[in-house]
Length: 403
Image 1 (cartoon, one colour):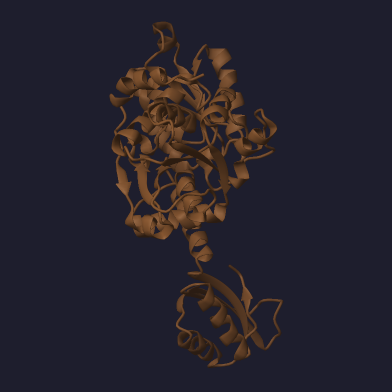
Image 2 (cartoon, rainbow, N blue to C red):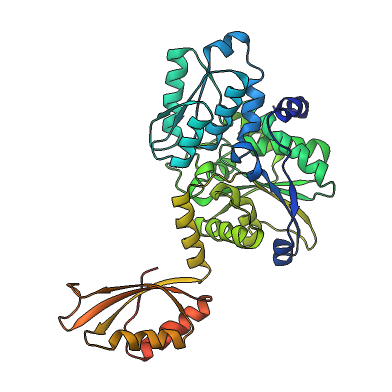
């Protein structure tokens, strides 16, 4: 099992490439939760995520023969970028297999860091199968995204930094995909502060660890379906599972809705951009999925900030919907002059702001003397939405909530 000595040895190798990222006290989230919340801003790491740490530690330990043959790996994006940069810095050829639906921004960034990218499969697991084929065919060294002690040790350097920067630490909250990050952090933290609690967080749509702990052995889920693509893994690693069983106190899950809302909260209140996987640790705290005491010092790890802009737009919209701050409705008007103006007057009196209007006269679902109107509205919470709909219906407008 991974030993803290390996993490300590990794620190020098990792420090040559990766940054010591900030630990930022959050007044906003401390006030909201009652805990003392310090955000570990690993989203500010080189390549935008923690993965550069493990990749650097692994590649630094290759033999001359392995360096000559090159490396290969599979990744949904962040590990790909970490391996690409670490390999380029070390003068090692890297080939990265990424799922066909990996965010375009992550694919392009991986190429920019110097790696050859092969797109294959619908998710990480299918990409991994292809990468192992290339490993055998080309004699490359496979750099596992999480189930490798050198990779785990590199990720564990985050734990060393957290303890160093936050000596009063009570609880550290860590995202889990395949388990490499939490294995390294738990090993580093427990060795230095054995009473510190380590809480792991998975997305509900990719919760292999939670299921595996109930079964007592690694279990593969049928799919990994979540907006947190960085932790969308169907099966926890064999080595990481052993560490999780031994050193992680609790594993919880959060919904995609909670992830989206937290991502929006971080953008708006902390001016911090994270990807879905980077939001899950804080989401678990805000949702109260694990118990904590008033004034407890809690460090959620914001593990990455590489979010595709199209995904970001969708997630922001979803987060606003969850908060009751965005509403799309459909209604029907008499097709006569002044009808739309009267509708807009009702909306204005209800203090809703109009983002956009679509006016459709040719819908087959309406009578010939009617017109269908779809409105995008800015609202001020779920109570405001309920009052707005009630007011519209009181004026005779049938309301269908689209979003």
